[in-house]
Image (cartoon, rainbow, N blue to C red; front, side, top):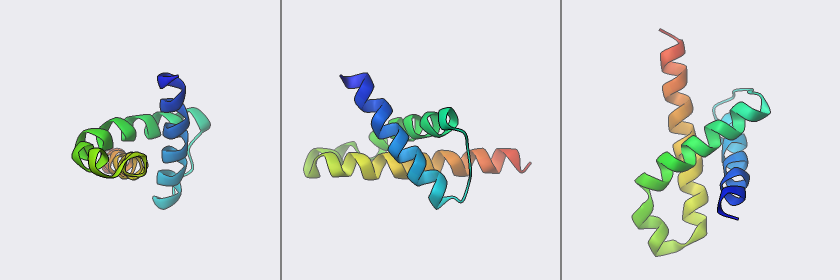
Length: 78
């Protein structure tokens, strides 16, 4: 169940992050960015998640995905 939940949250976070960053990626790339963002955001916002629950996890996943997309864009623009 944990892996399925990670894919679902990753897909949602990736979708939101790509829309916020005005990027169009394929489905697998969007899910990958969302999962990567969820891992990054989970590390950054672990304390906040403990205090406020699952909503903080989604916020952290979206912020992490946005950060990951920003890094990818910066590397691609070199």
